[in-house]
Image: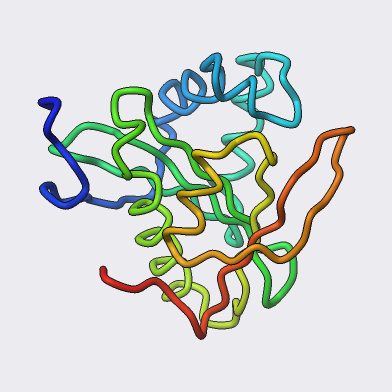
Length: 171
């Protein structure tokens, strides 16, 4: 990847995560910035991650998408049905691809794919720490709207939603 690579110049491929992605997802989950912006800042233990990834990959109401740029893993998005019509969203952009607008593109593509796979889901919901401005901007650029301010684990947060009727645009 060169320093001029941007979401407007490259194609993003999306695929479902596999067991072979476990180490990659573990490493991403334990990046310093990810832990700092998490609601649980403690490092994820390998044994806990292995149990978690097996559970999520086997859950028919959960999808973990891996985003590839020029064949290289660049990010992930996990969407999980918590009600018949509602799914929760988590997204991550690899350090090598941060700061160039990829997060918003990943959110648009992943949200649209999830809406196609889960026709009953009407609302995608995310919670972002108020001090995580990069993530907040990515969600807003991808069509998510702020619903309300929350306080979780003594942290100020925003709850954002993407409604099926809005959908992802400009794919």
